[in-house]
Length: 306
Image 1 (spheres, rainbow, N blue to C red):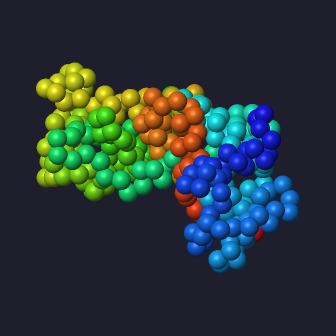
Image 2 (image 1 turned 135 degrees about the vertical axis):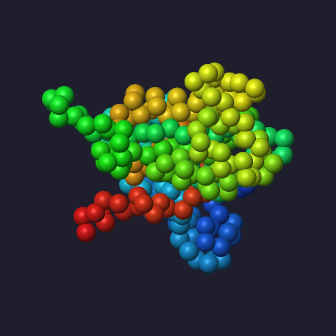
């Protein structure tokens, strides 16, 4: 926050264009000969080849920004510094912006984090992957009188919002997450995101038996032991622990519509938990510059009003 806007722009430019040490490169044609045509607080450049005008945030997740670039960089610092995530309300208070602005900004950073593992395939010969699921959401407030209450475990008495976050975590590797209505619905996804020849560790659920058609599966019965016969899902459980703490301690409630984004964020935090904050800041800002403007959150409130 002690940076001037000019210094903050230099930091952002060096991360976006590391090959030229922050010198602008045209996002349309890739030409590196650009002229400075700045007329206000935001730097603007003109490509000598295609004559397109652009700013350092053009074509990135931070395009069409209204806050100062210093506030955006400060938001990234606050976001990566939080071990269990940070709520939009707290982010808004720290940056002195509205809740809506902080909420959209946090989701853009989650989108950047999720892009790191988009389409990634993990595992392979000689590697081990742990698979497990965590059910969340769909809470229905029970009736006041005991005789009016129903068994919420029955499908007929649920509201359809309860989802399962499936984590595929490679030992000493990365985490792939996805959200499904049930563990059964995740089998094809797991087969597509885990390389053939991988040893897959799961719990005793019958759902994972179908994975044996492609992988060597080792199962552990958690009613007997946490690990047994070299089968263990502690790495996946570690991810779920961080996810639960974020849900209960920070956000208090996560909508099923955005559950996939929160799960990807927690996977990123778990994978990079040993890295220093400076490295995480550079990584997240770098991912922001490599992703196009968000389809879901660019002009979100304008579309809603229309």
